[in-house]
Image (cartoon, rainbow, N blue to C red):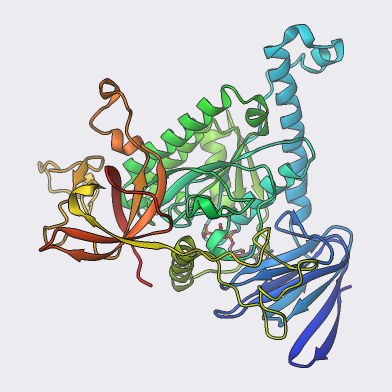
Amino acid sequence: MAYERASDSGQRRSQEWTLAAETEYRFELDAGTSLAIKLLRGRAEIFGSELVEGKIYLFYEECKAAVFTWQGCTIEISQPSTEYISEETPMSAYANLHVAFEGMRVRALLDAQVTAHPEKATREDLEENRDGPHDAPRVLILGPENSGKTTITKILVNYATRAGQDWCPMLVNVDPGEGASMLPGTLLAAPISTPLQTSTPAHTLGSAATSAPSHISSNALLPLGYWYGHAETKRNPLLMDRLIRNLGGNIWDRWDTDLRGRASGLIVDTPSSFSTSSAANNEHRHNLIKACVDAFRINVILVVGHEKLNVEMQRMYGSRVTVVKIPKSGGVVELDSLYRARVHKYQMHSYMYGERVNPPLGLPSLADASPLTGYIIGGEQSTDLTLAPLSSVINFDDLSIWRIGEETMAPTSALPIGAARVVSEMQPLHIDPSLPGSGLYNAVLAILAPPHPDEVERYDEEILDLTVTGFVVVTALDIPNKRLTILSPNQGSLSGRTAILGSFEWQE
Ligand SMILES: Nc1ncnc2c1ncn2[C@@H]1O[C@H](COP(=O)(O)OP(=O)(O)OP(=O)(O)O)[C@@H](O)[C@H]1O
């Protein structure tokens, strides 16, 4: 049984909660509030990442999460928001999945080592490997809106990194509405070697080092990202398909020489549109699921609490892929579109300005916190996580700006019979900032990696296949003088770079 003890010290109202084994303390923060949690005794974890005893963890920006314990623990909470204890969690089911995936990883690594160096294999290795080849877990997570897909991805990745085997599973996020560890509009993959932290919905899947590399936090990710540029998959499914296949190709290239990475496998978090069936989107969602299954060579599909989708996936993929229905957690919070819009703002703000956290009332500020206990924010023990973005004025010609396909792209099937599309969904269109309606004012631009250095290797649509190196925002447009004012988190020159415009805007 969980019990609570409240203590009032001046303005500060802290509470102690003692949690029984296999229960969790769930909390939901309101806008403008923060929460501090300290593990006093026992062991506890947040979405698979363990808490260190005695450290104060800060949560902010409307974070919603849970502290779960396998064996029981006591935690101290400051200034609670909406909170409750749940004795019913699906954690055992998720842990069983992890155990199964762990077995697959171990066998896949042995397999790869025996194949690469047969001369070094012992008789036991060969015996163990007899019924191979063994595959690493390559998992696609499907489920409707607010079913907990991202949280399950995080738990499974975190458990893999804690297994003590130096696994480095690839976390793949193909939900362009989420942004994961970069910004919304991006599809990405990142190898994960230390547990992903939870502190703000602005970085549900860790934070990337693309913002200000000189200010990198020690656990920042180095993801490989492609810019899709829109929140909704239906806006340009063909582009989604291409970027998913690009991500898959890149991962497999990387794994050519990385046996342990390949054996660690991958986990793909998907948007809810992949799982929401409607007459209008059925064709594109099936195509995108297939793109994932092919590109990432998926061998396990997890369907979160949705019987019809489970049956559908069994029918479509059951002969070659293991399809498993898994329970949804009762703790998953229903997030509405206004909340998601606020999270996009938090993400943009933190990309440019870093983290600005006010600890709950009665606790010392970040600067005054003792280094011994300190605060932990997103896995960092730090007093200053703020950034100072650079506003610079550049000439129109300095940056080559493109858009992919038309601005409002009706599906080909919606065109009048006999009408041909003038611009295809995949066609890069150069943007002239001096023309009215360029859409550049307040626009978020993705800055791309340079094209192939060898002219012979270049091709028309290369721009679609270049990865993202960072993002900037156009804050002013001076057409008479042909100049743009750009806000960027770092000082790198943009001269000669290529950028893509999507449909995201941001204003402080
Ligand atoms: N056990 C839990 N206790 C408290 N909050 C939780 C719990 N599990 C998930 N949440 C919160 O619920 C919200 C929705 O969860 P999550 O983002 O994992 O769902 P999703 O299915 O990926 O959503 P989407 O609709 O964006 O695809 C998140 O804020 C998450 O932190």
